[in-house]
Length: 145
Ligand code: ZN
Image (tube, rainbow, N blue to C red):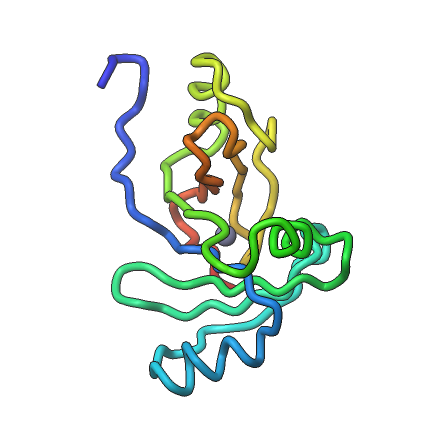
């Protein structure tokens, strides 16, 4: 690791899963698999209804589109339901974005914004990350409502 990149004690904050029907997905993850349900909320800016289910040291974030224009609706249309993004916890989202930008990675969010649970987040474009949509989540919040 180079000197100018701060070492993040990386943790997978959560794994985002795009689903067509949140209630149906909860029947699997919550009722059948027994994962606790730690909250549901709508994130209007992202056009999603989300549910968080803790799983060990991380969580599953189920994402249901609120309408056809939602990025999650477009994702499901193109690729079907499934893993949508991986959220990595970092110490400082703004600093991490700057490091990525300096190294030529393509960002979706140029600046941190407030995501689910009031946590500072930013997304990195999958075109520059081997096809994985990465969400950076600032430490101190776990993205949970
Ligand atoms: Zn997420």
